Image (cartoon, rainbow over all chains, first blue to last red; front, side):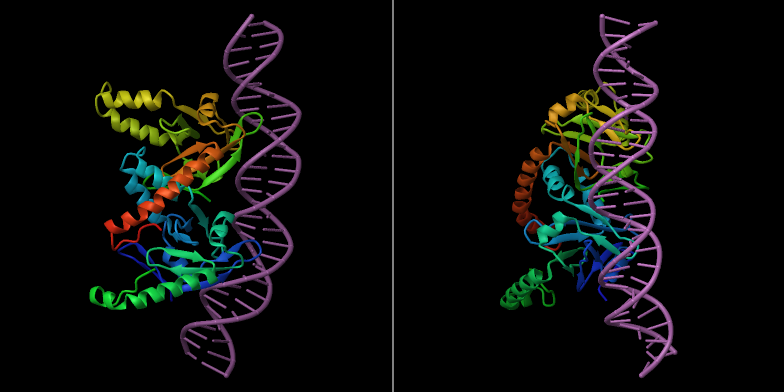
Length: 166
Length: 166
DNA sequence: GGACAATACGGGATACCATGGGATTTTGTG
DNA sequence: CACAAAATCCCATGGTATCCCGTATTGTCC
């Protein structure tokens, strides 16, 4: 399994990594477990935007964006913070609807950003997930493991059982 | 896709950026997803006014203007607050109706303010959106990304256990 | 181990959307 | 009141996303 909805908390949880094919039309199947973690949200699909720092696509259910957006809306909508957030995330976000059979189309901008051509890796990250070109992800993951190995001792002392993402 | 209506909250959510053409008659198609986020509002179109600080057009559904106006209205209509709101926004606002096929005409004042000639970028900002000359927006967006990249570290430091947008 | 269900994937047909052009109505101006 | 300019309506088109089908592969349950 790979993802669950924690009803009662109303938070989707994405786990595991799945590699799916991108067909000639640009369609990709979103892992069924990710999809089921999103059922019940106000939009049947995902929200995706290019990661600032990585060659990856950040994604989550629309609920997450809604709450972030609502939280920030309480501030002055003409403030610099709102401006940066809006331009960096909201403007680059894409609402990608699931087709009837749970597939979606990755827009070209997003595919380019992640160098995705014919395969896409869906990487669970808890409340969000990422979409990578499988090869690129393998490399990044290796580096992360090395780093974790090196920091193993200090991690032990602080947080015995948590895997530190990147 | 790019926008949704949060029924129950009655708040539209505009996401993504769409660049559409302004034809010889001055008509622009409002992105279909933006339009559908506005369905059911009391006016079939948008409300637009020049941004104070940027070379852009601020826009939203009429509901937003109504609720802001109503919120202020509870206070003294001759208050400084209302005065500022009225002068800064209401006075320069334009109600732009959708034609039959979802297009509208940008008034010359607005087009001039944003230096829009033959293309218009519709930029989602959550509960509102902006309209830019595509080239001008690209520059502003690059700056915003840089800022977001830089602020990412400080965001992390503030909330060590929350995953900040990457 | 075998049958069934669920999932991922491919392809053809359809519906939707952005855009253009012409025709008709409205606006404003003399 | 008539005329020109502008806005609106109405269609037509090309491209793309969506729907809907069938098929293969995987995992599950008896």
